[in-house]
Structures are given as structure tokens and as C-alpha cells.
Length: 287
Image 1 (cartoon, rainbow, N blue to C red):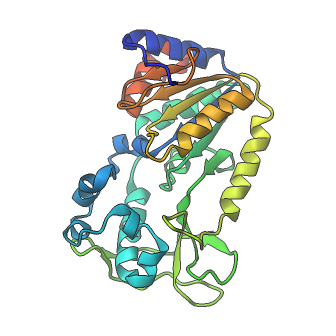
Image 2: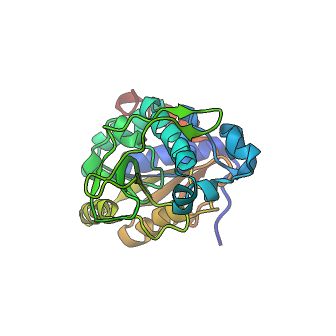
């Protein structure tokens, strides 16, 4: 059974600072809550999703329905309106200060920093983390693949600039096309009910990360904004601690509970939690 987070937030923060100072590597694990402090929408529940995309709310189309290959087949202009809007939003979003703090802490550790994230927004790359040390378990919206797919090709989405009617959530300009067959392209993102996602890019990331993890002995895992509804990130955090050793710092406002007494749960949002830990660390650990 998970242990209950300490009622003394100050003790939790001081303990988290100690774990960071004593670690030989930093493993950042991040779920959807990590981007909220940068101004990205929260898709928690239908109401939150429909607040961000009113046209989909009026049509009573939920997140799992639009974020699926079937949506691209049934109404590609609507599906690309949704993903095109997100792509443009993520491109212009500035990562919050917490990203810089994590990057700085990792730079001070013997074995550096690695990232495991279920987010497809590319915020860690934008924040300056080494792409070679990032594992995006659900893929990336910044990369494309054929919708069929006609091959295993994956390519950068940099040449696609979506123009979206935000009121109707419809793509105005031409679809991105597969350079091999000329058919419609789609994001290289693992969607719901997705049997056509090409995982080779993510598999290469996972292989590199596994090799890196084999070289660390006392890591600290800092988990941010990862809930229990889809527990991919939480399970990865806990499994790393079991396999490699080290400690878990779970920063989560709603679900900060941790599985072991030696781990720390901080009941705060991602940015606020990281800034509080930075203040406790002080000196050369803060920026």
C-alpha cells in the first residue's frame, strides 16, 4: 500500500533537497501536469478539455475520441484542427522556470540528467535538455508519419505550419503529406486505439535511456504532474527505483503519495514545488 505523504511540507522539501544533493544522477519523469504552469491546457476530464476546445465541446467530442486514428479517418480536417492547434501552441510556449532548475541540478551530478515523459509537447527539448537523453513514451507531436502507414518513415514536422480556425477547430490549409506515397500524414504520437503508430523513434530513445541507467548507482527520480488515471509515468518512476536503486521525489498537488518510507511526496504543483526545493538547496544549486 502507498504511504501517506507527510503533513509537514517543509520537512518534505528539506528531505527532497538532501536527496538531490546526494544523488549521482537525476531522472526527471513528467506527466501532463508539468506543462500547466507554462500555460498549456489541462485536459483533466471532459469539462476541462471542452473548455480548451469549445467546438469539440459543442459537438460532445471528448479527448479520447479526437485523439485517435479513427478521427483522422472520419474527419481529417477536424482531427488536424485539433493537433495543428496543439502543434502551434507547443511551438510558441515558453517552458516555466522549473525546467531550467532541473537542467541545472542535473548538470551538477556525476552522471547528468535523463528524462522520461508521457508528454508529446517537446517542452524539454525547447528548454535545452539534450534530446539524446529524452524518452518520449507516447511519441512527439513535432514529428510526422504516414497515416496508413505506407512505410516506417518518421520525419520532422518543421516544414508544416498549421493554420487553424480555432472557433470551429478546423485546419484551413493543406494537410501535411507523406513524402513516400503522397497520402495524408499524421503526428507520430501514440493515440487511443492506435494500431498504426510507428514506435521506432521512441524505441531508440528507450534503448539509449536503458544504457544510461545501467551506468548510475544512486539516482534521484523527480516526478512531476503524473496522475494515477493513466499511470505510465508513475510506474516508470517506481520501477526505476526498484531496479536501479535511489529515491523518488513525487511532486504532485493532488496525488503526492509515495510507495516507500525512504521516498518523498511533495503536495505542490510542479513549478512551485521545484522552486521551493531550490530555495531549500540554496547556494550553487539555485539559479
